[in-house]
Structure formats: C-alpha cells, structure tokens
Length: 253
Image 1 (cartoon, rainbow, N blue to C red):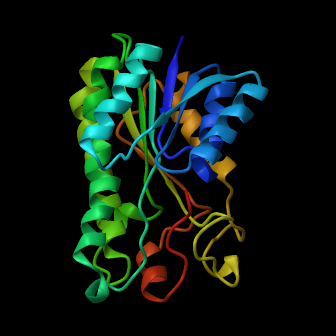
Image 2 (spheres, helix red, strand yellow; image 1 turned 60 degrees about the vertical axis):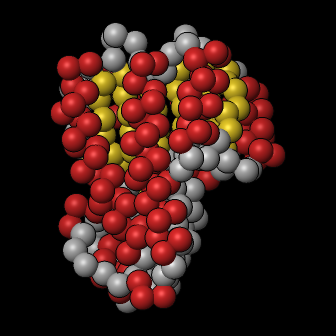
C-alpha cells in the first residue's frame, strides 16, 4: 500500500495535507511532537473519511527521535512513497534581540531536521521512486538581508537550496524533490489590515490552496517535475519588504 508521512500534521496546514493524501489512497502517518490529542483527532478524521493511517511521534530536530520515527514506519508499512516536510519553528523577533538558542533551534528543525529525515527515509522508498515536498515561504527565491525573523528566512532559503540539490542527487533513484511556498493564509500569524495592499489577487489563501499544490506535486501529473519551487501566494512575493515594515511574515502550521 502506498504510504505518506506528513510532519507536523496534527493541525492546520499539515492536517489538511494529511487528510487529502489519505483521500488519495495513501496510508498516512500523522506526525506530531507534543500535540497528541490533536494528532489523534486528525487520524480519526481521516479514518472517518475512509482513509487509513497511524500516529508517529518525534522531534524532527532530534536525530534519536528521527531514528525512532523511521523505525515505526518500517515496522508498520515497510515503505514510504511520499514525504512532506511541513513541520517548522517560527519564532518572530528582531535579529539583535534574538537568542542564540532560538536561532539554532529554528535552523535545527526547519533545515537540518528536514535533511536528516530525508536522509534517514531514503531506504524506505521503493525502486519505482517517490516524491518529497518541502514547505517553504513565498518570496524565498528573492530573499536578501533582513533584520526581522532572520533565522526563519535563513532556514527557508537553505531549504530551497537543499530541495534543488536533492532533486539532482535523487533523480537517478526516481525520487522527485520539490518545494511549495505558501504566502499569507487565513491562519497566518500576522495578517495585513487589507489583503489588497499585499496580495495582487486581493484575498488571503487557505490551507486547502496549499494542499492542492502539494497533491499536484506528489501526483502522476507532476511525474516529470523536480527541483521546482511553487509559490502559492496570490501573487504575494515581497516577503522581505513585509517583514521589515511589520507586515505578515509566516503562516501557522
């Protein structure tokens, strides 16, 4: 049975992606770190819709936990066809007031943790290949310098480079690696007073909009697509400008 793992899928965007993959017939692992009650609710929801899945717990920033997560998947299904790296740390703040601990935690979970998880799950992918989708941030391709939420932006810029590098490295294994970068969503941490000031389409997106992009990239219609970043932002891609002027900067997961 084809299998998917969505990190940070107890709620919000991760939950929506997990539910949608289960509807597509994937045995879906609902991952959580501490939100067991919400993760269990997500699992019940996908089962009520006719899907199948299981819970898997762990801190993506902890190599020991990653090893345990991979072992649980191997025992349960013995394979992995889709990996969605959705989990992420978002700690807003000014650069000079940012603690070294928060800076390191953000990079450890958002970037290093993604790399470790991908590296650790490679043996689970079948010879026919599979799909990996990393969740980024709208405007990541044009990032320069900023004094606001610097660690988060560094982690997402690094994840874009990692995505493209892994697409090259894993092409021979038929594993496609892409990124989906959400813009301002209805559940964003910070919302603009008027979406029209920030978004050309004039309204905030939904988790369903982002899940649509993820499902496309994991599906057969994207079988010849790898190494790309797909902005799902309604045209919003001036991320650094908004961060510097106190505008919206990230969505909750």
